[in-house]
Length: 53
Image 1 (cartoon, rainbow, N blue to C red):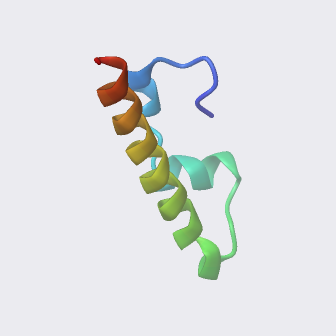
Image 2 (tube, one colour):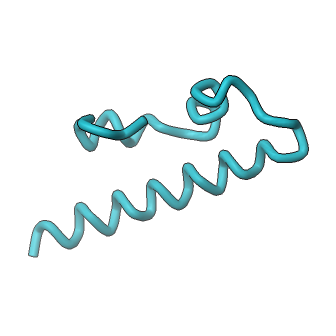
């Protein structure tokens, strides 16, 4: 979903967009999309911080 996208566009990736991209998940596994989005955003923050140095 993030390949070849600007960082500002990647920041729009969230649980809902992941679920939509996957065309849904079993309800008891939807939290996995949230965990993926949170982890992805943390990685983006680290990238932004480290590239400034």
